[in-house]
Amino acid sequence: MTVASRRLSHPVLTIPSALIAVGTIAAVAAVLLLRQPGLYESLLILSFGAVFTTISAHDAETRLAPNRIVYPSFLGLALLTLPLGTGDFALALAGAALAFVLLLAVALAGRGSMGYGDVKYGTICGLALGFSGVLPMLLLAFVGGGVIAAFVLVTRIRRRKDAIAFTPFLTFATLGTMLLFPGYLTI
Image 1 (cartoon, rainbow, N blue to C red):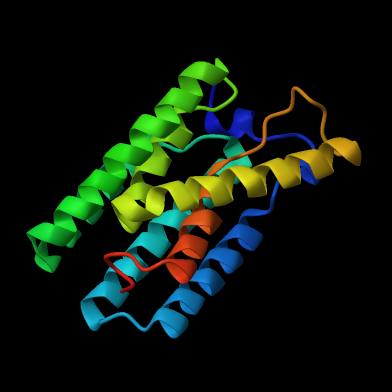
Image 2 (image 1 turned 180 degrees about the vertical axis):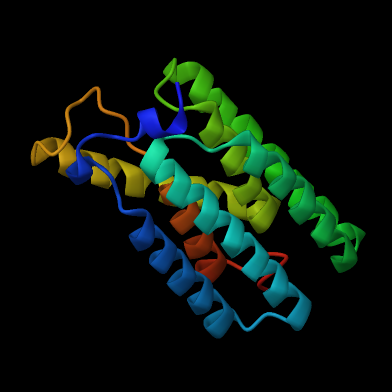
């Protein structure tokens, strides 16, 4: 099945990728303005923001987080955390590992209700936050996703079996966590 054939036929059911891109850019700008990280950290946050925008917008339209983007992004962003020092690099990798394990457990327990693309993407989010930011991020993502899912079910925009892209929730939860909690990039 091609990517084009996976696009949803009902535009009402998708979150426009342009809306996700604008929201992500605004959230990244808020993080930079309100947290005022150093120059290198700011550039790293912008790099994460570019990856967040690309993958979330693609997932919203196709329900896929493509490996050809996810894997190189993770590797590149992980390498970009190295100049911050071994302590911050270790925190970033620990955040990635914790996010991976927790989201994989949810995906396995949910038997298909969460895709493995969400697990891989959540690993990048964990890398951005470090170990201490993963639990708040997941809480925000699942609460936000639950509220929106309840809304679209009650309003009958979606049916119970319809899929909802989860990466936008992970994106905004990650950026919200950067705003609300200090991390290795936003001390």
